[in-house]
Amino acid sequence: MSTWLRQHWQTFSLTLARLAGNPLATLLNVMVIGVALALPLGGYMLLQNLGSVTRQVTGNPQVSLFLAPEAGKADVAAIEARLRQMPGVRAVRFISREQALAGLKRSENMAEVIAALQSNPLPDAFVVEAGGSAAELEKMEPELKALPKVAHVQLDSAWVKRLETLVALGRTAVLILATLLAFGLVAVTFNTIRLQILTQKDEIEVSKLIGATDAFIRRPFFYLGFIQGTLGALAALAIVYLCMLILNRSILALAQLYGSDFRLGFFGFPDCLALLTFAAMLGWLGAYMSVSRHLADIEPR
Amino acid sequence: MISFSQVRKSYRGGHEALAELSFSIETGELVFITGRSGAGKSTLLKLIPAIERPTSGTVLVNGQNIGSMRRPAIPYLRRNLGLIFQDQKLLYDRSVFDNVMLPLAFTGHAHKEAARRARAALDKVGLLAREKANPITLSGGEQQRLCIARAVVNRPSILLADEPTASLDSASAAEVMEMFRSFNQVGVTVLIATHDEALVQRLNPRVLVLKQGRLES
Image 1 (cartoon, rainbow over the protein chains, first blue to last red):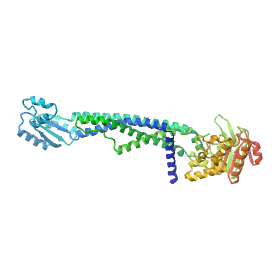
Image 2: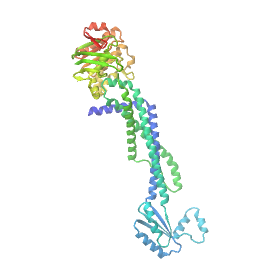
Image 3: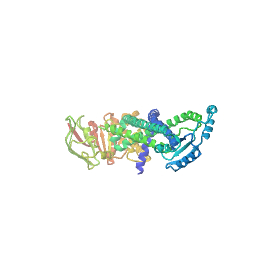
Image 4: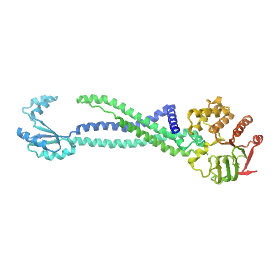
């Protein structure tokens, strides 16, 4: 056991030393993998952020009920009572026409317009929050429309649906990109390992002749692919993180204009770990394919 | 113990390197294989570490049948053999010391123990002072001695050398031969292929003479 561990440790440190001994080539390889991974990773980060925004919005799907102008206090009370009894309704908020007008007055540029009006053109309204999804809310629509003195029912689910569809489309695009670039990573590793095998052709031949097992000869190349994949993934995380910092400067300025403090968030630890594992495995796979393909060519005669 | 019985080796294209070869070498023997180039000396030596497999017949090394040996078992056979190649196969991208360390990398010795063994082997061939040098800077005789150090560092029971004196002047050749003899004296079976008749006569060992793939008696 200790022999086995020692051999692995020796191989690991030898591989690191080899990588460090050729810093330019190592850097270039790692950057190729890093940039290739950074593309889908960056897309994934943006989607995740967009997703969290949508979830915030769609977490409480809302529907607005505008009442007819002639609706009186009694009607309002009756409708409110009916709404509260409906299954799936989580909260009901009444906004009187006066409240709505006052709200409008507070918003910029509207005060003048409103001052010019002779009477209040706004209707009384209910904002209903449903617990379920936007789709469930849609099913409630006819029932809400049938309520007496309700002039108009406005679902805010339409644009949410569009956004959800867009996010789903983005996910598919990122997935396709990630798949393609995963192949790229395997190909890059395959080629690096092929070159490394050619460079060490003499050593491999002699090692085979003096009693090295195939497993022993293969091991450093597996490590090379594995380490290269991991370093590439670290580079990708660094690239995406830097891009996020740069973008956040502009996003924060933009968000402040809208009175929000929204900014892009980075991946959590589990996501980073998943990426590292994935890239390391792809590197290992590329190495495995290359080693299986090229090592058999070096058979001593 | 090495035993060949009715061994035939032919290459694709019909060239017959060895034909009906039968002999056996006891443990601790020193045996020379002579013959003109192309007589099959190298092929004979390559059959023992399973670099080549016999076309027919049986090659037994320490009781193991080389012809039917499975691939994964071959490395373990080779670790028990010390091989000195005609083209030396030294690695010029590392020091003399690291060349000798190579066979110890996969036998699982701790670094300290491996380094101790490598230095002992280098000391035996008189190259300890040159351990940090690159093999390319060594003289022909020194390079051959380095090959010997690499071959014996795992303390093999059988030493196989293919033309170990081919490119050496007579003084260096004598030195190298003396080394083989001293290994033989501590019980190592030594098998040397050479066409240097003068050298062979001086040592007066057992000689197998090959002619067109057959033994001449």
